[in-house]
Length: 347
Image (tube, rainbow, N blue to C red; front, side, top):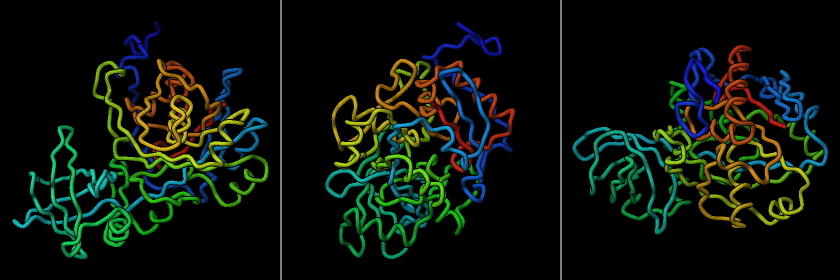
């Protein structure tokens, strides 16, 4: 087994997925226009790396490709409120559960029964505290319990886009456009499917003219940013996210010769379908070198956090050693990392 910095690399060990990233390479704003972002193309046929930009994406896509995109839409899921005592609470909406109950994260001390008051007469009551730090709440407006659609309308009025913590800044007006994909349609995500943020209208049009393009939905949850704490990656409790695959996308998946997943969310949705034949539900699939893709042929994605399930997903396509090699190359060439950063295409 190879070593890196005298540490033995083991695809099942979380520590093997660590790497050092200079802070200046963490993108806090996107490049403009979006398709001017850098693109690293890794060709598995000959192990070659090509440096280009998203504008040239079509030059590298194989023929007979069916392309799949995630049409989830990011909610303004971050809201600020107060308890009756006056204590401040920050709440991050995560996802709806059954019977108008909602999974959230909170900053600020709360206990079961705590009432939190927000703008627009919105109130949350904590009904359960989970061991992982999440909370289950009911939301009310003027004492009326809120369903998901009503809640989303209020959150989008009073809330803030939940930019990832590593951006280390508050959301700005421009993020309302930059942190949504061109084809965002179905509200439910607390993070954008970031590989799709690189598409301009012109680039998307060119792709649609040449390839079959389909949309599916996976609502990205806060768990996507959760680091892997277990020493052995297999012991990591994978988060689940709601997904739906429509009739057209299902038909295309069943008949496609080759598939390109735009983003890790699309990859996990397609691979979950390939294993279960389910077209909606909760996806908790963890792709890694011991659980490789069986349906997705090509992947377009951004660069991901060290020791995250997402970098492990990349390793499921190209192996651990090659993943670290590609990331080193991207750092050397000063690629911008994470949500607003540059990307890579695996073919």
